[in-house]
Image (cartoon, helix red, strand yellow):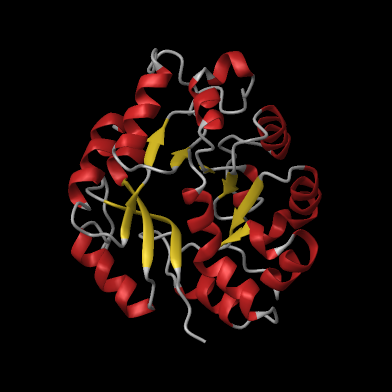
Length: 260
């Protein structure tokens, strides 16, 4: 069966501290996508991830212009009131420019503070337009011996309940969090997971059986991780072909098409 993979988690662009062979250009990304038979990718700029947010968000639009298989994602800070005093304008501009997904990492300061007054009114605009929000750096995506950054399971629960019309996705879920992750997903129907880092044995099958394939997204984690593990876990999962197609890319396409 021909699969149509859509990568929900990758970035390109100049890094402050690049490692050898780091993918930083469009050409390098397209080469990797061709090698791994990935048809489309949702891409943000590394400078935006490294806190030069507005600069990176503008650069990603220029870098991928003319490449219809690459879709821009903008990065926003967790707490938005100070930076974005006119949230209606910024979201309207974002949508007009073809940006249909955003990526949010916990703040280096007060990374567990998710009260509405702290998050800011921009989140209400995301909800109004049903913009898919990718949550990075949660406790559900790290190994137990790694330092915590923010977005505890309780934080994710509170955010999902506060903004029920935002389709949230947890990036890079870790197998060690499964005992908390599964009940969280059952409580929050607007929460999805990306499985580039989910190495539980037959984990994709387990999630499909317990929460449904329509809430699972393929991702690579490029340039920090290879696409192979995520693809293998999907290709070899004992699930139906229809479920496999949903996870490979159709779920992300649906979420982005539902943006209003």
